[in-house]
Image 1 (cartoon, rainbow, N blue to C red):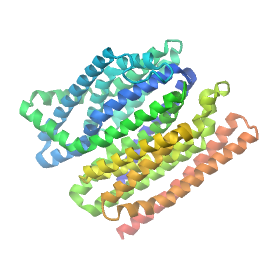
Image 2 (tube, rainbow, N blue to C red):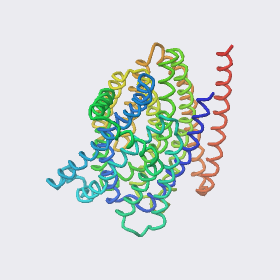
Image 3 (cartoon, helix red, strand yellow):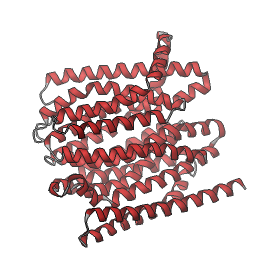
Image 4 (cartoon, one colour):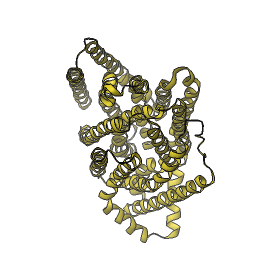
Length: 499
């Protein structure tokens, strides 16, 4: 039960960040709306983040598992040297990439191929240049956060990230008449710098360890980190290429296409971040320890607990995203801002709801494989999933438009998740099916029912406030019933196992 309580604790902290994220979506929609300038910001930020994840994502993802391996195998001193080495490698790598991008941008006016997307080129290039310092800072924050998680400091970076996001959003609210460029950049850097500020003592520790590090040791630990991360470079490369492809197609849809996609992705990623954080901070260390110390049976038991917890909380997120999809559009843009582009957000949100389940199971499957030392299986499944996603986007976008993007995400990540659980161990995929299928059925019925209730209220010409309150009460009741049943099932299953 300790796993569940830790999970609930982290979910509570993440819930605050979720609330800030929802407020941020509202503020951005009301102030930046659906516009060419915001399209350029979305494209530029997506490019910088994609480059960051392509190069450094595998290192950050394998950091915790490799740290635990050095700590248990060679002692704390070796683990500390590993931390210092990876930190230096990541920061130096980010600086080199940033300088390389500056050089490329100076050689071409349209190196991104945006000339045919409605005039994004100039604004996108300017935004990319202004975001490059964030490339270095964000990677330093990622490594320090992973370090804090390894030593049991989970909540501090989460709270700092939440406060940073809140301060950035407050800045936009307080100074809405400033140029959009300044608002977006200041808000972004406030969100990056807040976690860095609270990890300053850990940064000093890393610098101290670095001073004691020999050049030969630095090369050894960087090489060790690279070898562990190597299998993940292909899926990360394909994953970010898939994301860039999605943004390119959204840009081709015309002015506002990227803006609408960004609001849908913002909602999905805000919810998804809860699980990404919990799985990286709690699940991966617990699964790694269970696999290395207690054997396969204990490992599968911990995996099953995490499947149930993720589906429970993920189910609530899916029902919320699907059931409130129509209300969300009016709330975000207001009755006077409901253009055709803005109205396209509702079906996107509904499609991203089932896609969120696929992504959650994909993340959990990947964490399980990393904990079990099966990085190659993770790489294969992830790569295949991204290839399927890109093929579906190219094939279905001309027919379905923006809806093709969440559809491709849902199908590709479901396939990859199934392959991951199949590779995790004998019977793991079967156990996943037994646990997931009935919960997915309940999830679907609740989501459809909640939206139908809202549609009935809308047809009855009820005020938006009435729709929100009534649908909110129904949502809370549904979530409470599901939680109660799941809690009783968990308690009875634990009692049966102990007997």
